[in-house]
Image (cartoon, rainbow, N blue to C red; front, side, top):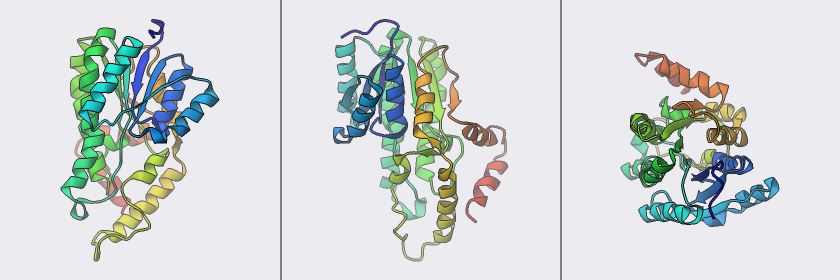
Length: 282
């Protein structure tokens, strides 16, 4: 099945919920051919229900971005079925809440595998096809890829790596006609927040020297996410980048995300960021 040329064939990761789900639905509504992927197809019900409600057809496939064979197979299957690949939205991700003294190196490595190396693997597999269509490479980062945040060391490290990778790749890819964009949401109301690798009902290690600061951070985070942007709104921002003029390299999904990122981008010595984040620890 080859789509009409005015449509885009777009491969999206992490579509079982949140931003990825809503980006897939919005892209489908816009008339694009959407290959919507997720690590476990048993979690596809919410996406299938949303697609049915929106009256859009999606090509739903399994993709674990940490498995090289899975990445290669999905890209090959997309080309075989749809004839080309016009855009990739790297959205799959996982969080981790904690500080390194209470974590293991393997904990950090696992976060890097999903959030960074998964992005690298799919980008590498997709680029030859995106060159052929002069396509778009869109990666959902985070304001946590701009400003390091307490107790998010592994997650922010991975998102910083994504931003450095994409910022370095962008001018090279542009010479082959491929545009590169990183999307930086702020607080978004989604199940991602509930899956950050820590059950807030469980206590930390005995005599944890950071216990009070962590509780202060969690209280502040709860307030922040109480007024979070909806996943639907953020997903629609992502999907909109598929159409029209080629987007900027860096795109925030809300006014609050723009204001937050602006603190770092005008903070040459880092003192403003340190004052701001230190205040979150009470």
